[in-house]
Image (tube, rainbow, N blue to C red; front, side, top):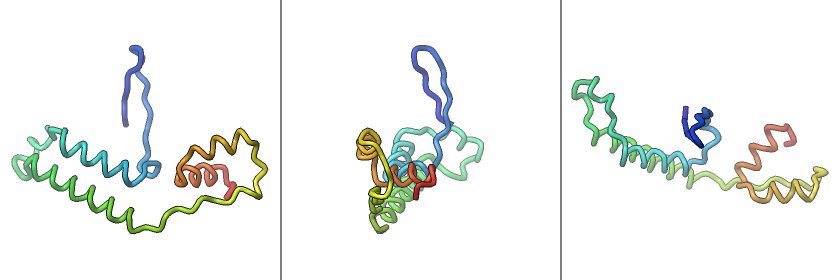
Length: 110
């Protein structure tokens, strides 16, 4: 779970892996590899070093990016059959193709 503070008010939200783009996941793994200390490695009594774990995360990041680049690009759905208002279409146009698909699938419109 991710936590953030705003004006001294803590709010909690859950981010789901499936909602992230492969690029965002890869970037997050790179960030962790570069900045996380991995304090829990002390409990493993030297089985892995911080550098080894960081290297694994970077390798996974590269694999995710490679896989994502090999996938076919997501096609934008055809909304001509949907009776959407201009305001709704304006909002949808600001979404990525993946976000559009998630939105329309969640409302069972496609």
